[in-house]
Length: 500
Image (cartoon, rainbow, N blue to C red):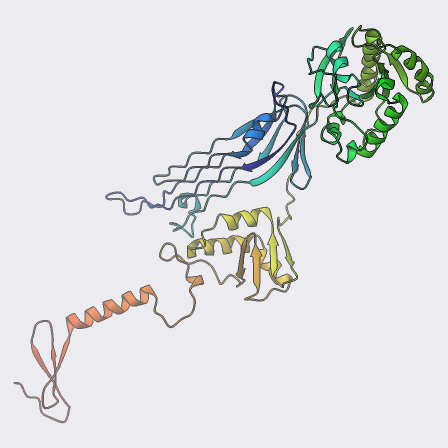
């Protein structure tokens, strides 16, 4: 028998995007080939889809960790990385997707309904895609964006029209086995049924589904017995049926007291007050069962219930019960509004919408929030000065620096975007092309000479040593030795010129 699992915790990890490539085309007789680094591929996402052939969450119970593949990195010669493969997870009809905190993300009802629960990371752009009139040969590329990593809770709430509720051993499993093709386990001891059972019932031209909820006892709504675990399966039902044991005196129970106890648990669970109720007095084939049913029936009808006396063994009264259930289900279906086709809603972004917010927290840090700016932070290689300068230009272009200034930020104040915190310094002028991977605006003032300055000094020393050698004689006369090795006398203007 297949194990029934209706609640699992999934640990999801979507694929990371591939990094962009930094490459410059090098080909013989073509010194100005330009950048040709390809883009990284997008990471694979994780999607849930309703499959009518699935009836339990058992597969996820044994495999709770789900990971999609990463995108491939870009390469030279304008070669883009491959996209990661998306994962499609099949779930039963009626699956509710929640966060670990209980926030409902999606309620999946209807075959083919899909929900992207984890989105793969975007691939980073290569330097070929980042080239422009100012940065003709970028010395950097974007990093791949990490995919979503989250834990979600999947709960299965059966999609049934009729819910059977009652004490253990009241005959719910026997009843559903004779009015439908379901074959639940049936025995003469309490808590025989450990999982909800679904059955399809045909009554004339009407077809509806029936589910029984096992283990309802006093205190079930607070966790006693099995009721709290399975009460969710009757949330979607159109009608509730109280199955009362007409042979209750044999086990020292009163059908009316059982009804009151179950109603108290339904009220404690909440959300079921508007469901119509029917009452079934079961086991009238047992001695004294029929007499007890006739005794309690007037009291039940006085409370406004429709009462049916049935026997799951002899099948007495089942036809009247199924047709009555079909009528109630049909009335409920007609009372609901007609389903409308899914409409595509377009929500264009406002022209003046900045897409980010700037707030100052209690520690004095200016926090910039926004999907776009946080994505830029994740895709920036902070070990590359040119990449950092490019990020600064983008932030300035969308107005982040102006927003910081309006909030009172001063140069040197801490700013946090996403997981990065840094000291804010306003953008200093426009970008000037230099050696790849560098940005002159980020050079700190220090006594150490730059690489260009050291190179110029070496060239100057080499020219001086090749073109001129200075020699001083014992009498203080300075002789300059040229490359031609011709002596030239250098002395004071007051003395006559002499030659050695």
